[in-house]
Image (cartoon, rainbow, N blue to C red):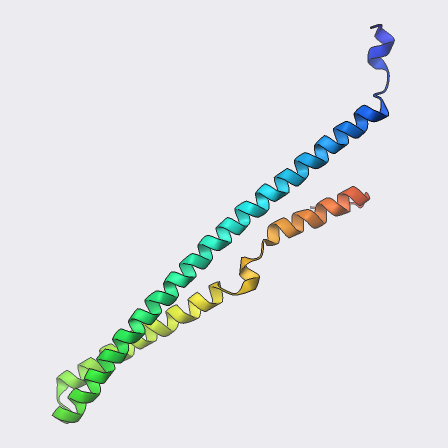
Length: 135
């Protein structure tokens, strides 16, 4: 090869090949990012289901305690052990309500969507169109 061959512009075929390699790498990276984001969101959903299960267990416990409080309250007609059971039952009911609220909000479909990947894909599409992207 002469020195002029080394300085010659690359052929169209090699430029297209290089562009396809970059696009392929970009798509592969975006798929990997989407997979990682979905995995993270799925873990959060599993945690939310766990919170809901805990809420159900606490709600059942609260129901039992409240039932015992009503029985004790009616039987004892205002003696202290019945009121204590009532307070404990109400406290467990509040905790269960908080867990249900947190679990259901974490399970909303919008929180599971891969939003960062979608934004990256939009940015990449704008870049391919030649639009300016300000970060």
